[in-house]
Image (tube, rainbow, N blue to C red):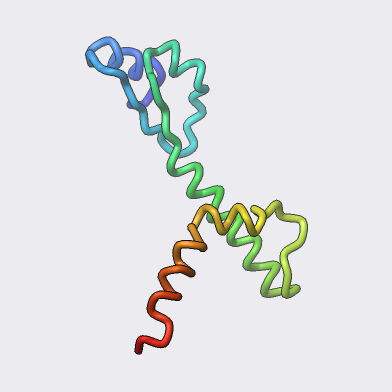
Length: 99
């Protein structure tokens, strides 16, 4: 779909809730998509591109300074919760000394 009008046309023709995978660099506002009949919009490329840019900046600072400064970072607790560090440590503990 190349325009919000095409999204609206698809929404009229498809008798189910419409999910749109928004292409990179497209500036469709959520309220436009909602008016067009879209129930959910996902922006995977934009999130990946933001993550890549942030990682590139952090890596450059680590290489140049040895630490990251001036870039917003998740807290250690947030990171641990996201990757479920506690479960991985528990799993490692079960096999510690087994090999």
